[in-house]
Image (tube, rainbow, N blue to C red; front, side, top):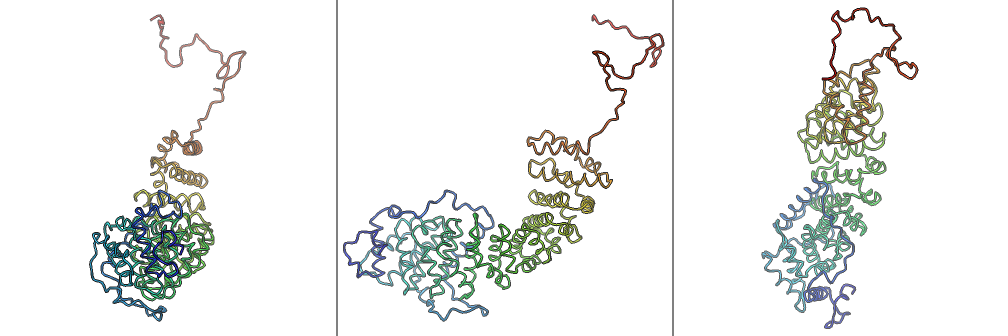
Length: 571
């Protein structure tokens, strides 16, 4: 009634309205009303940058997901297969496969007006509703440039949302959900949210039809993945609990995989969702890592990386699920799509307190460091150095682990010298953290690995932050050298370090300039021995330099016997 009350009704008795009639009225009035946007009040302000992806990896993953969706649309929904190890919800009423794929008709954008007009006729029956929903779904089921603007201009959106409420017609619900999923997978995700579809999709996660549940999860995943504002709307609508139930009791491998992907989007984005909203999912994610569904494991790993990217409480929530050993085991593999999120999660954990860092060391990370530092993937080498730098910021024993023969410090120094800049930066952080926080023995070992040359190599970069990191390392190394009687000053000079330090005395950043001056004055200053007789003495109102002495002007010049030359100053 609330939905219908937005439109003028003169021909119908509201008390006798059926669901099909409601949809008919909705579409008829939308077509008459012209611009659809004028009929709806937005539920929230949409910021200009709401769909900007700041994480390339996630953007690529959503693009791949959309591509997979389009391929599945083109060939129809496959018959569900149920994993033997999963609880089967097939005892609930299932959507007949033949009814899903019954229509073989091909629809194009030219069919949009005729499809819209079908709902404006009196006495719309179920078969007509199904054909309309299926027609719009097929119109949108193209991989490139789906005609979303033309579809929205037809005014069909409110009718599709209303079709989600037909609880006794799962075939129509499925087709409407699929059509809305196609719209949500474009840059028009906001219109699906503003049309009020989210609460209906959350409710459909508990539908008796596995296919309807899966399609609803898919659409919610696209909506949540489009930005933190939409993610929070989905979570506030209660999407997490029924989604977890579908993961725990999947009716098919496809449903399981799509729900895990959606769960990862529920956890991602900054500002982060409240920990209380995503914490119930962490034990489920930990269990997924023990399974053999590769796609689900990748999505679960990304979800763990999002949740662990926070304060110590977030990190501890992940550790409490017992994932440390599973994460380290994944690092032994050769699948980059799994190693990257696993390594990101490990890095987040070791950025916590010392006890949390130790949990990763106890799980055996150090023994995996060398292969990861040699990995051909640039991002994996970068992330590995980042992890090591966080460990090197820990306790003396943790720094000792980094400097052990398994820690790969010679490889770190090599990367600091010659790798891509973003890898070099992380490698320099490892060196600097060891130099500034380690023992004298750690620093001596660091120098033996070639650390002075590596650090001096970045003292001319245009990056003030990294200059300070490098200068801190140089200062710490020189301090140990002076204390232990090592001529590290010459090492720095031979690496052109002194020249670079002198150049930094004119750096525009005060902190860089002051640090460079301090190092030069403390370790490279030359103290000339002054003759005390050269100190000026006061003689009356004048200064006299040297000791008083009686000069014998009659004696020959001590330098030579040549007579003093006479200068004519008039010229």
